[in-house]
Image 1: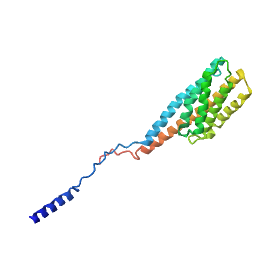
Image 2: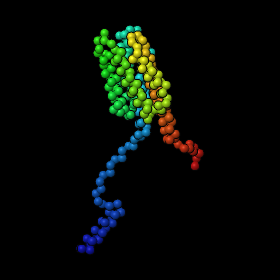
Image 3: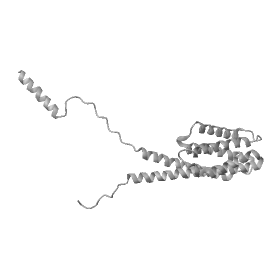
Image 4: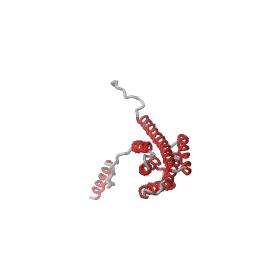
Length: 223
C-alpha cells in the first residue's frame, strides 16, 4: 500500500513538471496598448500652431485698425489688443512661462481691466504704456527661450522698443499714432514667432515620416 502511494505521488509530480507546474500562478495582467508619445507631441504642436495662426491674424487686424477714429475707439481697440495678447503670449511661451513671465501677464491684465473700467474722461495713456511695455518684456523673454532663435527677432523688437521709448515724450493724437506703431511692431514679432513654430512642426513631421518609412519597398516577386 505504501509503495503504491509513493508511486502515485511520483506520477503526479511528473505530470505537473511536464505541464509547467501545478502551483497557482498570479493572473497575467492584460497588455496595455502602446502609445506613441512622439505622435501625440507632434499633434499637440500642430494644434498649438493652428490656434496661434488664427490669433496672429486677429491681432494683425486689430493693429491695422489703430489708432482709431476717436479716443473712445482707441480705448476699445487697445482693450481688444491686450485681450488678444492675453491669449497669444501664453501659447507662444508654452512650457517656458516662468514666474517673471506670469507677472508680465498680470500687469497686462490689469491694464486691460483699467481700460474697460476707467471713466471716459480719465487719461488712458499711462495705462496703455504700461500694458505695452509688459507685452514687450513678455515677448523678449519668449524669444530668448529654447524654442526660438533670438537673432531673428532683433529688428522687430528694436523697432517696438524705439516706439515705447517715444511714448514718454508725446501726448494726445501723436501718442495714439506711436501706440499704433508699437502694436504693429509687436504684431511683426508675433508673426515671426508663429512662423518659427510652424517650421519646427514641418521639420518634426518630416523627421517622423523618414523614421517610420520602410528602408526598402517590399518585393512583389513570387518566392
